[in-house]
Length: 366
Picture 1 (tube, rainbow, N blue to C red):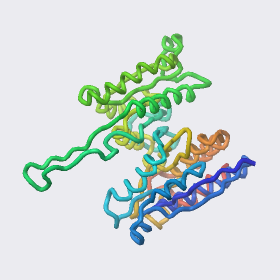
Picture 2: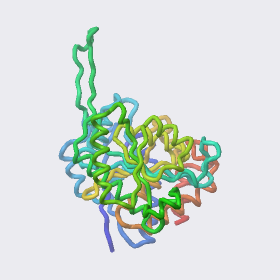
Picture 3: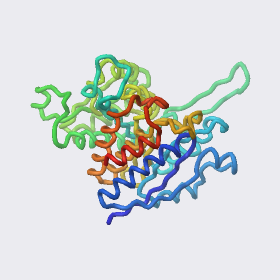
Picture 4: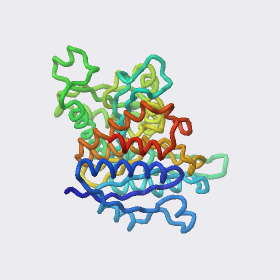
């Protein structure tokens, strides 16, 4: 029997509640597909920081390398100044474990209300591959002449060729994996006849951020010679915010930088029904990866049993795919869809069921 070592970080706010339901589903699917999960829990988060002043030490970070995956609920505490937990835990995990891909599937399921008129599940079905270790998130920059009339603050967007190459390689490969059995439905008959199976769109700002996107563009075009089946596309980030609303069906796989990815995926999440149904993965293809729902800790709702756990459960689908448990992943997806059909809403507190009831329903549907 295959055994996986899972590090569980429930975190803050509603994190422990949605993780609890996710683990309920994981236990059920592991029994069905005959694999075992050994869970180790860690208290990294706001409560520990308030008690001890500790965020995440280098030794604790290195200890997580021994696991097959990390399952994270949420990080964020109202009594901790913004930036401390985010940089000290989330970014340290992503950067320190070289989780250089943030994977955000955007899929609208049936019976999920969303704000775009005349768009349905057939229009919203794409994936955002966000580079996860570079950009302004590296913390490079300074404040000069602080507190004076001449004060200047800088935050530097930094990318190495290595970072760009490995992100684009993952994105190209993901297009091929996504369409291994059938070409993308958005391709024209002419494009299919030319041998294309899918499309990769670079989201950038090449008319202003000329240095950074000159690098991304050159690497993408050079690398495309290895992937002749993938049609190339480019969209400015401001135009992307328009097209994700007006014409989301034009996208297959989108690849973008850390900052732009952070922004457009939250917009995309709203179009798939909100943060309560939006999963994500922080991927290191050759080491430990971390899986977390997109939503935050929502401390005002903690302990009330009203949080939607489906994002945390769909995040397990991504984990199963990463661990090559494809049948388990498909079963989780099917079970979630069956439960969605019974819910009144995907919004927190308006679902018609409690957090625990939804977790039970998904587990029973497996």
